Image (cartoon, rainbow over all chains, first blue to last red):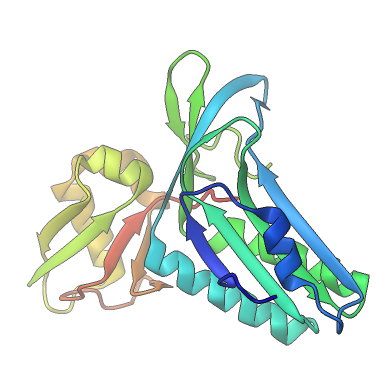
Length: 150
Length: 81
């Protein structure tokens, strides 16, 4: 069922069902799917939409590095990471990570590693569109870090 | 030497451009680039200390040589996910 690129940046909605299906394997006893979705409330402020920007060449390279590192640490059968870019509405899926491993602890740990590291090193940025009409880039560690790292 | 720098996210908004050509000394490092940006693009100063510099597909150390590279990028801390 390998019909999707393992690492992907896309402006289209993420088909997480197909993506999950693509990592299923008879070698795996566990499949873990993580979805990041657009949240309405952050520290009491109301979001109406997010805009994601990315540096595609570097983002792809970093995601491949993370996948390779995960494979050195856990017995990953298949791993797929898809991040969406562009304008996303509330509830939309911004990122999906699907991992299959022989056992569930491995799959959970590998999946968590991938999404945690993605948020630290992959050059993608989100811009808040607040309900008052203002917009604000989310840049952790800067003055604009409202809502980051949640 | 002429060196083009790509900007992303808030760095792009503040700089007012996606791409800027700077004149760097031949031995210029990432630390030097940061200093040059502070002078030549004063609008970046509020976020200058937090800006990340990438060479190719990797994050540059302060001592990484950047002059003349064709794949330089400058951007604030990432927030994907």
